[in-house]
Image (cartoon, rainbow, N blue to C red):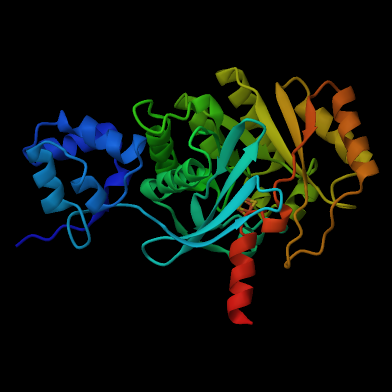
Length: 363
Ligand code: SF4
């Protein structure tokens, strides 16, 4: 008897689902119905699928192939912890994957819109010094289905809170470097943006990278329709390398060249993320150097308040320094805004809830 390694139905896009059914002798037209139930309705259990009332060939195929120990599994992460912020607008989830790894997902409510922040890896190899996930190190990449399942989780929670609300925006700013897990992330975003399912438009999806230069070039070559946010945090090689070890692999000069080419080839604005840290990267000289670096680009600078972590001693910039930094960039002609702080009381910086829980378990 041949045994097949199990793969998740959530890993497959609609074309993949059609191919699979067809290979198993089922009319591929059934794929659309299964896709709708998986991704529009968010059904993620064998029992739920079997209760759906599919036509007999598809019902039989699910019965024989989908479930624990069978050819196909489903991604339904287990909720380990959910913490709403005091203002009730942010919900942070610690989710356990099938192999026991835990990741974080955040549902953020702004005026009239909801954004989900997704993780793309368990841990992260980039080691940014001020980041709780970077301090943990890399464990593994997430599969496409594990990325998609986080959106389904957030949608279920939002539906229970208020059935009239929808998740409209997505940011890939949770645990992990999305462009270090390029293929899985692109497959997941294809599934998430498909209008027959979750249907979050590509223009409402932002990929945040610490500057994986070859992948930024690949995004442009492949004409990927998503928004790009680049975490800079330093405007000289030394300043950046002290905060972002990945800068030793891809220099600031190479990164800015890739961003310029990206902007020129795609015609898109790039969002530059900047975590303001007192005495490290918040001086007027740094701001002037940043404005010079970005000269001529369609760039928006997002200033982010530092989330305190146990493993980093730096502190948040004071209001006066932050305002001065902002006005230098604005005077140079760049839109420059402060990111609203979402739910600091729920350890909203990426990796912070997982780190806090691990500390509780150890103590
Ligand atoms: S900030 Fe992002 S890229 Fe840097 S270590 Fe944290 S998760 Fe990784």
